[in-house]
Image (tube, rainbow, N blue to C red; front, side, top):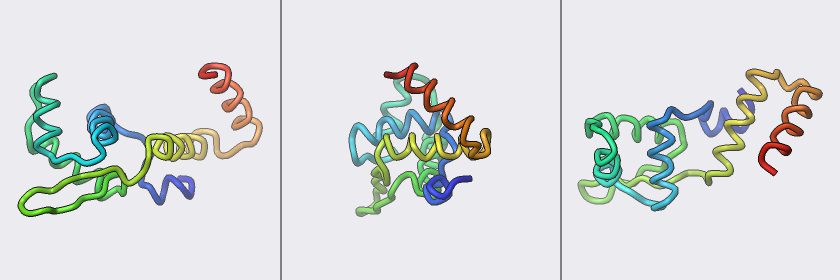
Length: 115
């Protein structure tokens, strides 16, 4: 794993983790209850699953956890761009082995695709 992704603990996000992070980035600070109330409107999801996922994201350094009174509030420990960069770093190292030509090819493809 690359230096940045080790520090951030990001190798990628599950769909649930990504959805939670989307809510956290949008709100900047949010409780488990607020996340659960939003997600349960889309599909049934146990409160404890949301809570455990947010605790795990915090342990991985992706979320910051702040206990105010009885409620834990979570905020992002990095921007969306920094998280995306950390994930790309992990993929480059794990899949491409930091081979210069392969990395250059990937950058060219991504530039064409998203430019």
